[in-house]
Amino acid sequence: MLSSLRTLWYTFLHLFQRNVTVQYPEQMPYLAPRYRGRIVLTRDPDGEERCVSCNLCAVACPADCISLQKSESEGRWYPEFFRINFSRCIFCGFCEEACPTYAIQLTPDFEMSEYVRQNLVYEKEDLLISGTGKYPEYNFYRVSGLAVPGKDKGEAEHERAPIDIRSLLP
Amino acid sequence: MSQSHAIVAGLLNVVLGLAFLMITAALLTWVERRLLGFFQDRPGPNRVGPFGVLQVAADGIKLLFKQDWIPPFADAGVFVLAPAISMITVMLAMAIIPATPLIGIIGDLNVGLLFFLAMSGLSVYSAVLAGWASNNKYSLLGGMRAAAQMVSYEVFMGLSLVGVVMLAGSFNLTDIVRSQRHMWYVVPQFLGFIVFFLGGIAETHRLPFDLPEGESELGAGFHTEYSGMKFGMFFVGEYIGIMLISAMTTVLFLGGWYGPVLPPFMWFGIKTGLLICFFILLRAALPRPRYDQLMALGWKLLLPLTLLNILVTGALMLGLPGPA
Image 1 (tube, each protein chain N blue to C red):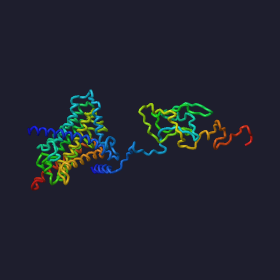
Image 2: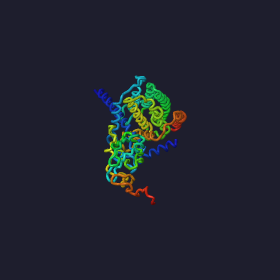
Image 3: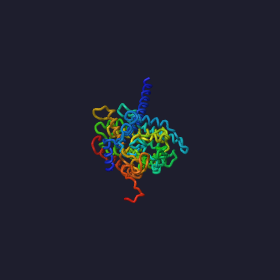
Image 4: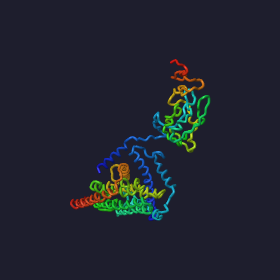
């Protein structure tokens, strides 16, 4: 009986407390920098696509919402198409973790509702952004040992020249 | 000529009064949701119209356009009758409330209190018949609970008012209020006040005594099968029921329209409104008791208390010189 009255009183006191509701469309909620929202494909500092279409993101994706096709030009791999079905995506961020080139990244943006379900399938041109995202300095081809046009083996950053395996000298 | 004038005036009074009731009941749904929101540190419905008032209109339109479905396994006639009973009984009971000596539909009825008890007794039928006609296990359980709960709480509600009637010496609600000019009956009849209010909550099957509905266990109980405007009628009936119990408590125990400075009808409105808010606070704060706990509270605590109240009131009236 007494506890009921106490409950009543405490509930009544809540009348004078601040609302915790964020009035969303008028008032944006704070989204953490690492918030996992809309997925983007970033470019390297030179403005080239970072994605090398290794398919690791598609393999890691538990919802199977990523689909891409490799193509090759001048010794580099590009995705011919890159498609994310956001009606299936669960925004787990596994693709971002799997990506060896920091190409695929999740952003703090969730406002992507559509009236037509088909519109939730984003193509490469929808996904590609002009910037570098979270890693402004990183360029995969500049740090990897891979030889591409304009950069031979051993010329990458923090890389030594390859060992001449036919020489006996140390 | 003058007789026809009186008839027209009377009809106008009835129609306007009932329309006022309906509108207030509809607004109450919004008030309740807003207040519940505030109690839970959230704003509640605040989107449609200023402060969300037009939420009422939106809900009404939605209810009107919903499919009005009668299940094929239901007893159609009784199924339709039940929500009508729910609304008619509370509205008829509401007619005898005197807001002020002048404002009210038939405030001067000489058996007003008995009429109120009779109508709240009849309103049991709405829940019972709805539960029975739905021909559905949950509804039947709800109706059964409603029958037991409302019939037993009816007893204490009636008995708790005996003290008031003894003090006032009348069943006429206007006279009862008039006899509270110097002291509200909540003071000498405090036990009666508590029991009447608890009984009122049970009678309107509002939380925490909403066992006939019991959303979490019976899935809306006796009105599980109802949709559209028939459900709306149960809803309006329930809210008018809240208003009825609040208004009755005001009239019987809180001195009706008496109060300093402000005009009488405002005092009546303030007292009733605060009681309605208290109903909503109860809903926000208290969990539902178990069914046997509810019955035990009624028969083992409230019944002896009311009987004691009657005994003491009678003894004091006999013992003390002059009218108490």
